[in-house]
Image (cartoon, rainbow, N blue to C red; front, side, top):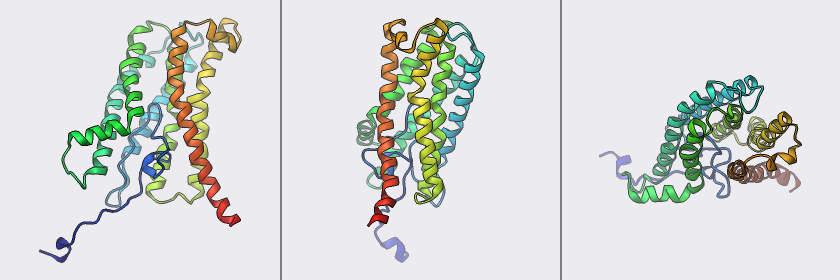
Amino acid sequence: MTPSEGKPRQRRDRPTATFTGREAGDPTAPRAPLVSGSRCPPATGGRIDPSWLVSSVQAVLATGSGIVIIRSCSDVITDRHWLARQYVWFLIPYMIYDSYAMYLCEWYRTRDQNHRHSLTTFRNFLSKNRLMIAHHAVILFVLVPVAQRLRGDLGDFFVGCIFMAELSTPFVSLGRVLIQLKQQHTLLYKVNGILTLTTFLSCRILLFPFMYWSYGRQQGLGLLQVPFSIPFYCNVANAFLIAPQVYWFSLLCKKASRLFDTPLAKKDG
């Protein structure tokens, strides 16, 4: 037995995943929003976690599909594009993968105490990821049936708009990589943080007023008239979709304010 084998193994605190996730050491920060990429695990053996690439590729494909659909639908109600239905079939396995990746993150964090996949680990996973699990479940069991069946042949334009929400994901993924490389002090990290906030605000929050405005423009209605001119369940569905985005955006802003206030505080001190 070598001397190194006889010594107790020490647990190291490693840099963690997202630009805004709790894994980055901020207990109030969000994980990743809407159709986001896997959250963990941190870099191991000097290698970068490859899950950022999976989430970024999915985001690029979703955003590209959304742009194509939106540009091809001059009538926001009746115009059709095949991607509005076919891309959803790609989204389903991705969401399943992302859910499993989140569970592996929880197991990774607890594996020093227990190398096995246990019920306790699964319960901890459910407890710590309630909002994201609910978010994934809504996408798989509510939005997918609506997009594929319940809406009939209407609303491809709005499906394309929802796909556009993925535009912020590559910037979230880049922030995660920069954290793993310990580059939080760099200009690139700060610029990427600004781009994350900008794309999140425009494509996850302002996206909803844009959809209402697009419908109103076609129907000859003002923006404030649209909520009273569409079925009530549409407003309820949009409220459920935008609520977690507003919450996550508020946490992003808090994270960004700490990021930019720290250098100023040191300078003033």
